[in-house]
Image 1 (cartoon, rainbow, N blue to C red):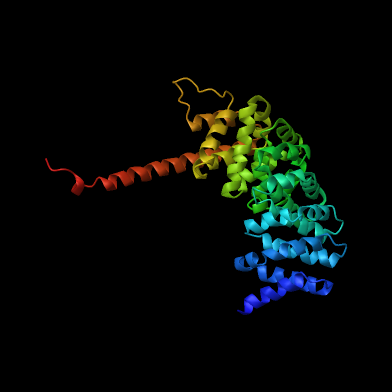
Image 2 (cartoon, rainbow, N blue to C red):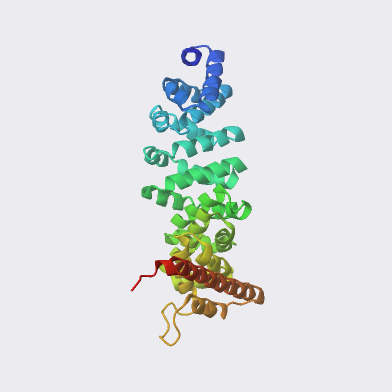
Length: 352
């Protein structure tokens, strides 16, 4: 009952004409909506007056309103859509251009949340948000960059948005983020997932190859990223090789990708293992199977690649990984035979 009264009183205050009351109400909405799905839904009528506060020239109005709307939108599809319908996108886009880093961060976080709704994606991309988000990747604060790349990833899942993203030339900034972030982080996962989509286009592949350390950044994620990140990384390199093996084989090999690929063939997920094996096949001197005299085993493919690798360190590491991979494979085969032997015990044998 007390909670209902609090919601009712707060809704009255947010619709009042007193500036102090409106700011207080916005802060209360932010607090109550932070951890309660029930409260988020009950504050639905507050969205329109909060959006009106975003249009004000008063910083306190803007600041308290955008934080309240952000909490109302989290994990609530209806509120996400309603904020856009109420006209909230235009002022939020304006805050992306703000010289105030705090408001810029809140705007990026808001677009990240709002872009999670498939209904909102076409409207957000049509608003001119994509170039501004890429600009945040270049010049924004660390937190704003994180939210911006995640918002771009959300928007990239709509095929019509991909050309807009490519036109904004995001690859240098994404590569820089990949170089500097922890490879097992959520940020790295979104960056590499976005690159996987981008390299399906000529402009994206050329941008990645042209960027100093671009391919290396992908290889490092393949080696040290989370399970999902490693899937995206091997897919990124595989897409490039499948589209133009002659052009991309050498740049990929040069960055020492073999040890990471070998590890994926044994310890990768059900998605990354076959992709790693296919990529190894494409990276060999000839992409076509050899004669029946020398079976086209994974070991033969890798040995063929190792023989062409320049540099003792890379070659030595690859050979060590190959030895370990073969050892693991033998151990797995032995365990499989032991399990079969245990199943077929004398007690289970038929009596003739």
